[in-house]
Each structure stands twice: as C-alpha cells, then as structure tokens.
Length: 210
Image (cartoon, rainbow, N blue to C red; front, top):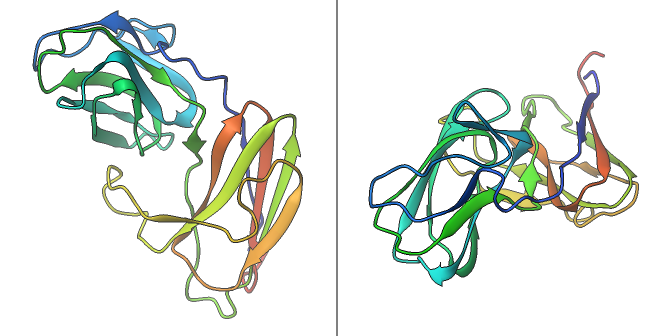
C-alpha cells in the first residue's frame, strides 16, 4: 500500500469565532457573526470540534449544529447546552452553516472552537492478510495527539457518531513515535487533544502493491 500521510495543525481555540454572545428565541437560528464567518458561513481552519460556552445553565436546551466536514459531506449534530461552562460536538466540522436552539435561551451564549479535532478517517483494507499496519507520528512544536481506530463503517451517514478507540501505545503523544496495528479495523484517524504544533501522521498497510 502506498503510504498515506496526513499533516494536521489546529489554530488556537477561539470560543466566539463562530458567533458572539447572543440570546435568541426558541427555534430561531443564531446569527453567525464571529471572526470565522463570511457571507453567513463559518469556515474553520481544519475540521474540528465546535464548542458552546455560557455562564448560565442551558442544559435544558439543545442546539442543532449544521455544516460540513473536510470531505464536503453535510453533517449535523444536536448537543445539550452548556451549564455554566462549555459543551462541544463529537463530530468534526469544517464549516458551520447554522446553529439553532430548541428553546428560548434568556442568557448569553457564544460559540466557536476548542482545542480538539480529528482528521479524516483513513479506511483500512480488511481483506489483506496479514493486516499489518505501520503507524508513525512526526511532531513539531507543542501538540498532544492520539491515534484512534474504529470498527464502525466510515461509509454511512457522515453525521453518525462512530465508536473510536485509542491506540494502546500512541495515545497522548507529544514527541515522535511509531507503532502498529496487527488487526483490521474499519478505519484509523489522528485525534488532536491540545496544542497548536504540527503532527505528520503516516500509515502504511502491508500486503498491497506500492
């Protein structure tokens, strides 16, 4: 298999890069007016988690977040509002086109990005024997990353939240490291836990022609 390489770097978190403090009525989409927004669409640096933040308790309200991922697939996720803190998506958004609350907010809430985000999943050929997947992380600057794999199919609805598992030795890495997978998951990805450094993620699967 020809080596697959992903290079990931997240900008610093921006808690109001998608929308500034506001408190709209139930069912009324928030006005996207943060620094990331052009012509009503928030364009993020890379696909990553979206975060809402408020000093009030909004846990009785849900927010539907709609946008796309880096593969330009439409995605949406409904999350519970923050309770005197933050709440965040599990899906990774590259653009955000709307955020709509289920109820009247009554207090200010803002939205943007946090420090976390995952790469596009890399599919694995499960029919190759042996599977033998080599993995490498090349890190520059300050960043904390984890290699993850899933046994769920990445080919269905892009809004499906898959079950991802941390690699046993390539979790919370802050320096160059390598490892392997001896069993066939459906897909592998790189998850950034924190930091604005750069990580090069290399994957090669044995048994396929280069």
